[in-house]
Structures are given as C-alpha cells and as structure tokens.
Length: 114
Length: 94
Image 1 (cartoon, rainbow over the protein chains, first blue to last red):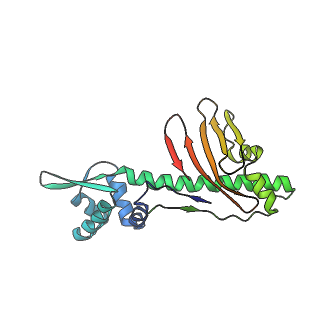
Image 2 (tube, rainbow over the protein chains, first blue to last red; image 1 turned 120 degrees about the vertical axis):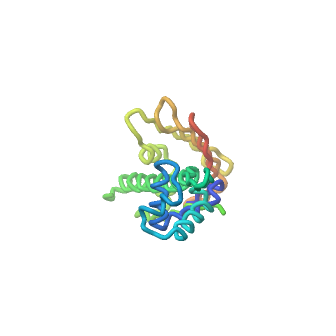
Image 3 (cartoon, each protein chain N blue to C red; image 1 turned 135 degrees about the vertical axis):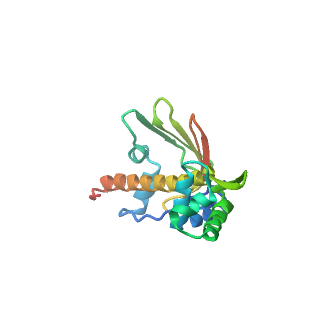
C-alpha cells in the first residue's frame, strides 16, 4: 500500500533536523515567541558557534526563520514544516488504524480471535 | 522526492477473503467507525475505471473519498487513485 504526497518535498530534511535533541529544544524555545541567538545559547550552555550551526540547519529546512532586528538576529518558528511532518505521521497512523480495523473485521469473519 | 508511506500487513486468512473484505461496505464501516454521529457509506464499482465512493465522518459534514480503480487483479493486487474532500479542506493522495 503506497501513499504519494508530492507536496512534502522537504520531509527528509525536516525529520533529519528534528533528530537532534538540541535542535528540538531550540524549536521549543522559539515556539514561545521570537528569540535572539544569544538567548538561545544561554539555556543550553553551549558555545555560540554551535548554536549558529543548529540555527543554520533549522533555517535551511525552514523549521526556523531568522531576521535581523536592530543589532540582534531574531529566530521565529517556521510552522509549515512542522505541519508537514505532523501530516505525514497522521497519514501513516490513519493507514495503521485502517489496517487494524480490517484485521479485526477479517478475524470476525473467519472466526479467528483478534 | 515524494515521501511514500509503505505498510506491510500479515492477515491470517485466505487471500480472497482479505481481498474481498477490503472493499466490503461492512468492513469499511468497521475500519472507519468514529463517534455516535458518524456515518460510513461505501459504494464500490470494482472494475478497472470503476469508482469507489466512500462518505465518512460526522453526518453533518462528511468526508467524501473518491477512488478510481487502475488495476483489479483478485486476489493479489488492487490499485486505485484516491481523492478526499471535506468541507474544510481538500487533500489528495494516491
């Protein structure tokens, strides 16, 4: 059973970016509102260049957008990519549920215990 | 790149039983059952080029899934293109 969803062109990049726990924490922090790069570095106790690298990866996959505001660079959540990942997972779960239902139906038909 | 979803399932039943169950209206009711208000209506014209229309979801605003069969090779293979519509949005998958 195959389901093609051609509009999700960057799903590989999204899941790869989300595979890192620090990047997930950065996204959680940014989801509360626009956050400067230095504010991102502080809670994680990691060097600025490391944060910049994480931000670059998140920006490339458009999970995050950055904008220069005065002298600081602010990060904002780019929600579409997370929505795509969520939709992929939901579609997968939908088919799992349907096949579970089909299995239950078939087992009642054949008298087999599910 | 289009991210596929590939699922494999082992059913403990003869091939023709599994094949027939898949498009059976009772099976569709069983596998799409929702809340007390929900409906599942399935009309299936099981032949190449035939349409399989499934209305499901809340009776006030049901989803309408339109499937067109591209291959019907009982009991081994069934290929169809699917479009789902509802009042709020429109998604398409195949």
